Length: 214
Length: 214
Image (cartoon, rainbow over all chains, first blue to last red; front, side):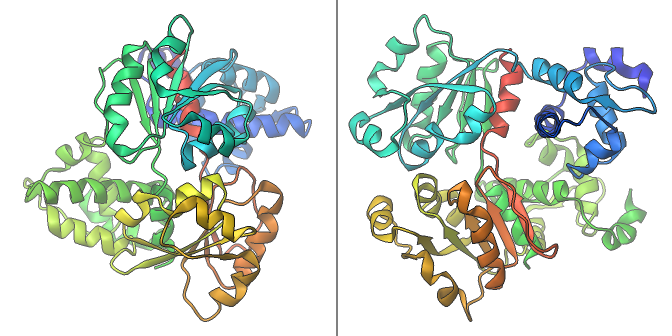
């Protein structure tokens, strides 16, 4: 396992590994709160349903963090993972579409808890949306999208607009310089290759559950 | 690869494989609409970012579907996967908590599109929720949970209640006989081992994006 680190660093890291890093990072956050100082790859894996080899292999993609026969120092590993995930600085997020789903997202406790800063919401009916959400995040008319973004560094745009508008909204945020999109709308979008897009499919977990209730 | 089928069937199928089955099933649905009759494991994988060996290995967990050197018959494979996923019958779902997020979920197009039947919503303030959602799904007071469920077969309960209420609501749906829970609340719940629980973490995809925008 150890000698492949250098080689792995030159490779593109699979998305699935990046996702698991978030999971590791959260467990480590819990462990710190419980004042746990070190943890083995087996224990770390057990908390997430992975085996120890998987944990070691995932972390080895990014460097040599563990001490053989000892495990990982919790707070060191957490600091490293946060830095790898780009979370040692504030990640600035905007939301477009503050309907029912967007209203839930703009004040979603899980975002702020994980260090994301929700900057602004944009909506075709901003007054109604502002009444609905009771959040501190200001909500602007979607016409103001370009003028608000300009000159500000926005890392990620979260999209929760009607499916019929998703492509044109995606093009507008990309033209305004946003390089990453999180799409909650069950419709594909086409953007230039350098823009990162992730789809959140709320029905996918439901499907995997239906397998178990046959 | 071929001779391991029988052995694999006796094993517990990893959750990740079940999740990928949903993805395969969706691609096959699209292919059917495009009148495509057959597809290779390489092409199927390419549409999802997996390699052909992964596709063959995943499908081999459930039987021998492909024809070597030819690929898969689209509509046969889709029918098989739907049956494996328990989707050859209607999967009956209820929603508890019809706030902002719940309002989005109760009328989420992605659920009905994938063959789930949203039966009822339950909410502490059912009148306000009914006004908010403009959905055809009836919304009852949460006090009526047990009496509505009794004698009906409910497959999955989707939870979108405040975090402070999640454990007591989970216990009530389990006591009422529901065997699977999809939890949208960023809080863990404790239920008997035989109850399947999945957590939807809306911040997880955001985290994996933050890696790319460092």
